Structure formats: structure tokens, C-alpha cells
Image (tube, rainbow, N blue to C red; front, top):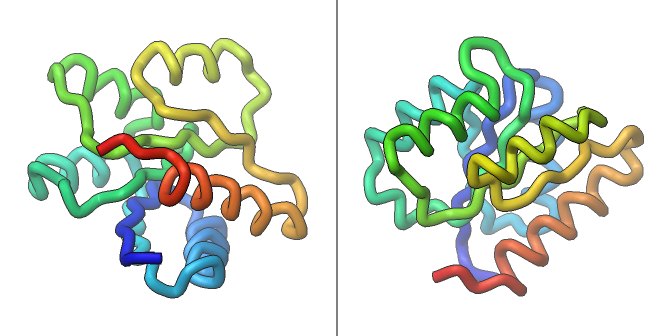
Length: 137
């Protein structure tokens, strides 16, 4: 695998650490940049245009300051469409939030696994599809 940069937008430090560790076990060449909330993501996105070095963003839905949905709303309002996919990653069971994420341009919606045993499996599927199988550019 070649080097990939993944933006991990997650407010929970423990969750972010687990995600980073899991992604690096899947592929040590993956560079994970953690952004603590949606506001930090929008700042990074604006400061690093055109963001061609970003392969994927994995974004929590419920965060302080700006939620994942608010980030997608902001991008849509700006008429801005990232060149990389944004995968919403949440434990929500609210179908209206899932639908809204897709309406606002989210690339996928993945439920956070309830058990740590499934965590690696879920991330392996994300990596396999978005970084290997799918070709968006």
C-alpha cells in the first residue's frame, strides 16, 4: 500500500487513540491526523487547500462546537466539495441523521461497533473500500 493521509475528526480522546492505533495496525503507512471537532476540521480544510494529499476523512457525528452534520452543512453552504470522501462514523441509530448526512454530501455512514473485537474489522472494511477498491480520483 502507498502512504495515505486520513483526517480523523473525533472529540473523544480515547476513541481517537483506538482509531489511530487500529488504522496503523492495518497499514503502518497510513498517516492519521486527528482533529478534535468540526471547527478544527473546517479550519484545516480551509488552510490546506486543495487538500490533494488527503485520502479520506472519518468524522464523528456528535461533537462539541460543530457536529458532523453542521460541518457538512457548512461545506454545502460554501459550495465546497472536498476531493476526498467523508465517512460519517457514529453510534447513532437515528435514521433521520443518517439520511441527513447523505443529503448533505457524506460519502458513507458507518456505525461504530459496540465491541472492540469488531472495531478492527470495521476499520479494515473502511480502508479496503475507500483506499483500495474505490477510485474517486
